[in-house]
Length: 172
Image (cartoon, rainbow, N blue to C red; front, side):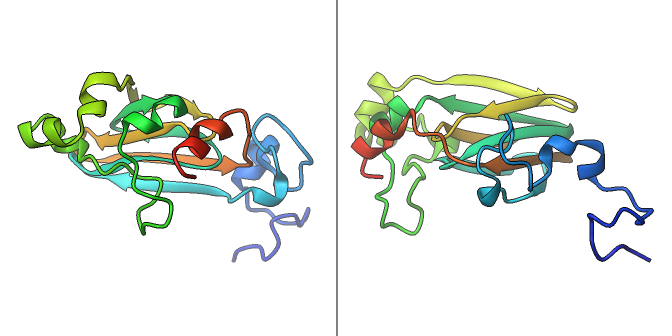
């Protein structure tokens, strides 16, 4: 017997918004919700060992929490986009790298993407249950699920514009 309106004060069910009110969509502005009209809710993803999300950027701020298992993140500053062989904006996978990070060190990839192998820089972090990660707008990220079952939830809200020039120079 669910509630039809999450803002109904008489509703006895509890929602994440009740526990974390700073995620409320109607909040004008906060650290988490930059533009309340751009808030897209909380998304959760389950993964099995070896599942990946190809290297890409999101055009909004991203707060990530791992609730179970482990996930490896390879992170690059937006200034690296010219070294990461991004597919063109018009491509169906625009915002994603053409480099298969799962097989990045194959000889043919080294020959095909010399800027990646000679110039690209990145950071690596492994998140475990209870860890969180804040990704600013346009940060590149490649994700690998490390454990047999893992769960990650994230929310995105609003765009900051400090890094626009980097992705603009890469055609976005």
